[in-house]
Length: 433
Ligand code: 4AD
Ligand code: MG
Image (cartoon, rainbow, N blue to C red; front, top):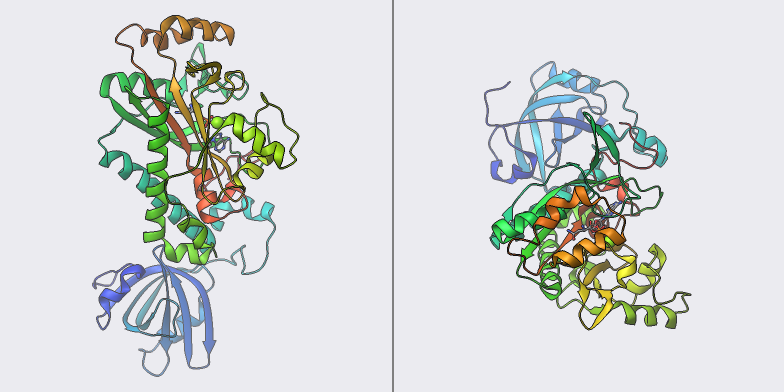
């Protein structure tokens, strides 16, 4: 490799006028007799490199002519400002080394079917849009971690092999664990509750698994969730925390990933509107609102994806819906002392049809009440022995929530489907690649 400072394309402005090395792949080549224009991407950005027959040492010009799309190259050259270039810079090439000459690349700058692109996901990741989406995903994840770390929440990782269901028994992925049956975690929550009693404010952040037999644009079988849990906290604390988290996520993306939002042609004004306070409505009022809009729904029904879309369309920022009927919610939810048929829970629904991005609330902290719920839901008591234990030793009101990263990425990026929000999506009929 040439003995010159290697630089990432996104930092090219720092190297104007100095000879540097760039390592990357050829996105595209245009040639005009005596000049080759090579668009190089290196993962951090894109830059046009100019190979000029008149000034380059012999051999390099001919070598550049062989370059196919996605060939890997090491280039030395001198960057200069070029106002006409989209990045604002161009590189005058001094030497070029071909690391590998790529075979014809399956993905061309034309329309491909979604099926074809999914089948080639390992290569599709290199495209400009996918790159933008996944950089935004990274920024969102970083914002979540910073948000909790800055507030002194302790990161406590939770297990993936578990003996019990957290979010209902219908979406469990079952697996063999030597001579026992195990399930892949649907949520880290139950373990985060144990962690909260040890560390106060905690969060877990990891992959979660649900055998969702539905083929919607919002469901994945494997998705990432960030889940804070707070001891000595109630529903309203969870709502405040969710509001603060969303504020930080949106601010960060607007601040650091504007280029990527532009590549995705995202309407930025929609994101700029996301300023606290977020509207808060009760489930009961939400039902009234839906009825007013002509939706046929009754108190006691759960919201379907379409209902969430209609509901959220009344607001230009995410809306917090709280106090759903306990009958349609998970077993662990605390009931409202004012109306025991309601759960002290909340969902945050994103605008523009993206649906539920956050779900959470206050947990039952009374031993007998929790035991009764476990029985009502016909859950195996033995597997929940440790969870019940938490209610015996210094039990306190506690609350938290889970935010699905892919749903948030889909909303922030303005995507049609969650399949593009995760590098290798696991969907109903997609396990390859
Ligand atoms: O509402 P859910 O099921 O809540 C829980 O799992 C709680 N135990 C979290 C907690 O309180 N600690 O899921 C939380 C979020 C949803 O709001 C949604 O954003 C996302 O996880 N989610 C999914 N994302 C993609 N594909 C799926 N199949 C999802 N299921 C839930
Ligand atoms: Mg939910």
